[in-house]
Each structure stands twice: as C-alpha cells, then as structure tokens.
Image (cartoon, rainbow, N blue to C red; front, top):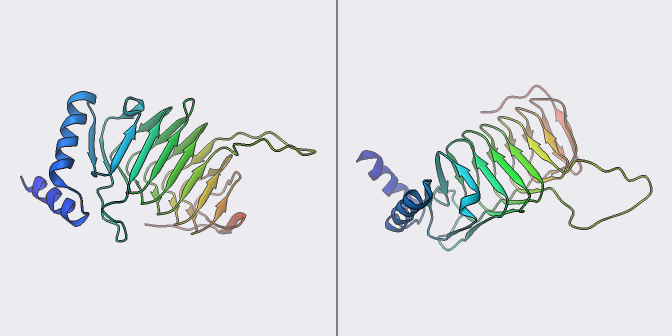
Length: 214
C-alpha cells in the first residue's frame, strides 16, 4: 500500500493521470506480459518488438520543465532490448528501423525530449545518465561520395556509467568508453579509447582524463 501511495504522489507531481497509468499497466501486463508505466500521452508502435522483463517507466518522472500535453512516441520496427528497470522521459522520440537493434543495460535513465533514430545498431551500457535534448543518429540517410572516402561501421556503442550532457549529439560510428562524460552540446563522432575522460566540443575531443562522476 505504501508503494502504491508513493506512486500516486509521483503521478500527481508529474501531471500523470494515475488511473489511466494503472489501466494501461494492467493492459500491457495482461496482453503483452510487460510491466509498463506510461504517461497518458505515450504512444508505442511495435510493442511486440520490445524485449523488457523489468519495469519500464515512460513519461512518468518529473524533470521540471515538462508539460502534461507533451507527447512521447516510440516507433519500434526493429528490436529494442532493455535489460533492467529503466525510465524514459516525456517528449522522447524513438524511431528504430526494421533491421535495427537497440540495447539498453541495467539501471540508468533517459531524460526528456531525447531522440533515438537508429537504422543499424545502438548499444547503451549499464548505469548511463542521458540528459535532455540529446540525439542518437546512426545514418546519414543520403549517400555522399568524394575521393578517398572510407566506409565505416555505423554502430554507436556507449559503455557503462557514461553521462551524456544536455544537447549532445552522438552520430554514427561513435564508441564511448566506460566512465566517460560527454559535455553539453557536444557533437560526437568517432572512436574514443580512454575510459573515465571528459569528451567535449565540436568536433568532440578528450579534454580531461581520470575523472569520476556520481
């Protein structure tokens, strides 16, 4: 009962309709065997393509500047795998192509108004903090030809315990090691090798090493 009361208060704080949240939760549990707690303005297309054994909250957590009419849309044509409990902020957009795979590790969260546009592969490790207004994009959607062009892997791989600051853009072929911090508004593309570093700028580069964040 205490947990139910606490969740009711959370819904009130975040302008979530408690009764609609619980009604949707019962629907997804009965028909899809999934534990989803969804704000009333959440739409999911491709629910069967989501592999999630734990609790998934979407649009429920309060983050200060969200509004109850903000819409969240998940278009999952490929595969979305979430290994543990996870929170997705209100206003996020997921567009996962039919041949694409997105994996998200244990714990961590994704804040409001973040876009995940993946046609190939995105892996997000355990305990990653993704701030608001971020973007993950693994395709150019147009062919650009020039002399000496090298074909690269489109995959985006984010290690464990990575903090991605607000407004950061993560593009195709990016690898971010464990423990790193991506500074706000950075434009990140390329493979970084140094764990526990701060990566910042446009184009992003390592500006500090041996950092820790909590």
